[in-house]
Length: 145
Image (cartoon, rainbow, N blue to C red; front, top):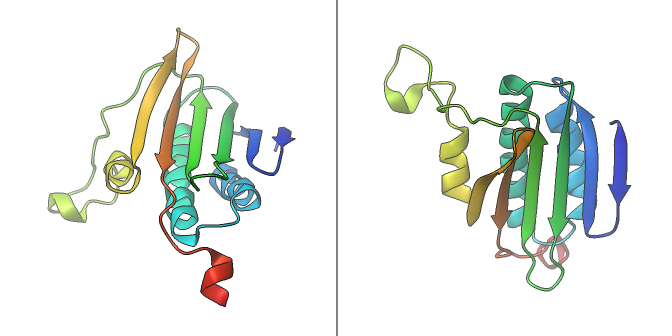
């Protein structure tokens, strides 16, 4: 990690664009989100997808990751900034049937698990890909009781 800004409900990190970035982002998420296990698991999957897409398809040596937890409603928000303003087509690759292809499922996963998600372009300097998951499961504390 290059830089960290951390509070109990929000973290911003700048990560090197490499194969370790998704795991590093998940660790930051785990430090911020300490309540709704279902939302946290979904957020970890979505954050991994968005970070992995930035590592694979974007330009530049770093990406910025922001994760936050709303203490009142339990929602989790994740956002990843990369320095490529455009967004790819989400092409799937492989020889098999559409539902058996190994790549190109990231946007489908966002559609399936996020309550909201989108892409916000920042002029010609890059874009944020973000998602929000509403709090909806039992907390880890309640599940352990």
